[in-house]
Length: 500
Image (cartoon, rainbow, N blue to C red; front, side, top):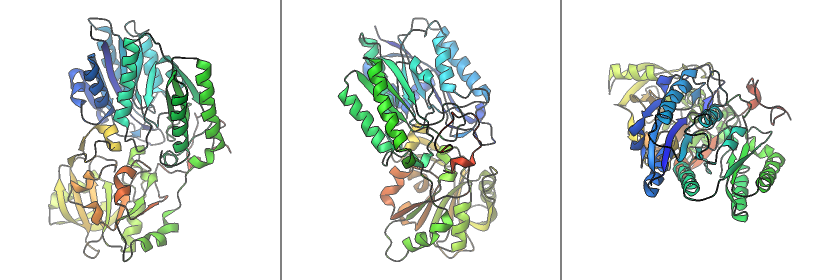
């Protein structure tokens, strides 16, 4: 008999310090058989479905909801999601053998600061789910609570940028299959740490995450009964009791051994906590070095990375700190992407070849830094749809391979000399994690002199290979790496770096 598996996904990285509320309409919803269309699209849901087909599960798809990182989710999002999931779970014509969940781990609604934990609690309360295995996948940036101990195997991404998101989902699915066909009953153990790291400190190519991930893999090799060790870098911009770095392990052996292993990781993280508190310099302080990097003989574009306006962390993508400085500097051949639906509409009105008087950016939040005014020569207009060039792009973990930026316009600052500042204006904020974003709009990134990248770490897979130089800088925006600027009220205290 095929193993019957209930499948659902809920995915949102919630920035609770933003003023906006993310509504049900801001989420993309898939219901029932629509979930099966994700197979092969490079997403975690797609990865799980690949294994389901490979091992012959009878998948019962319920609901999948996902949105780009943004402000606190409305309570109605969780209500709608649960109503759809519960209907499918209770109406099942035959018993389920297991549950597979595609989750983020850092979702917050108006009334619930641990959405994933609440979801597990509710599932365990259903007669059809109460005692069966729950496995699945979580983002490396999850803020994880002890509720994870009620599951049999939620597997985290190991890479940031998240090049392994679909692979992590496959590992979670294969773990569930191992449980379903065998006699083992894995248990999950959990360890919190008194640490919060900004996203700039959670790249896995650098310490501390590089060493923590290496230690986790070593534990898996050394202890056959420990099936997986998860290192969660956490998401600093969610004000919750679970916010911060945490660890979990899935074991079929001694819980004491697994807890001791996690304690070793926790102690290392605490001893090296300063390595993760990565705060970049102010843009103005390194501007001379940036301008020197684009002089004669420069090979490849110079990247100016703005983590404070990190779209992948919930920022609006319309902050103007770097664009303002570069426009004033007069450097030619600068490329930036700014999310500004109203500016796109103005460009559509004048058409390609026309000139629009624009106030670019600075509209979406009090952190945006004000508009940058210039006469924009409209170079191109499009519907903003493109397919990822790289199915292992960090963007695939958010949205699969088909991306919709909404109507877009490419404009050039008419006051600059030929080849001056070009801005790709988007309607839907889109993280800069794949070069197809620019190329689909007629911009060749390799030919630019400077590219402004609104990200923290996740851009690296796409942009580092083409870059001649890269400068991560502090600018105005809601994803600053200076965590003492946020009014935390719910995090565990004491916690580094808020309490030194």
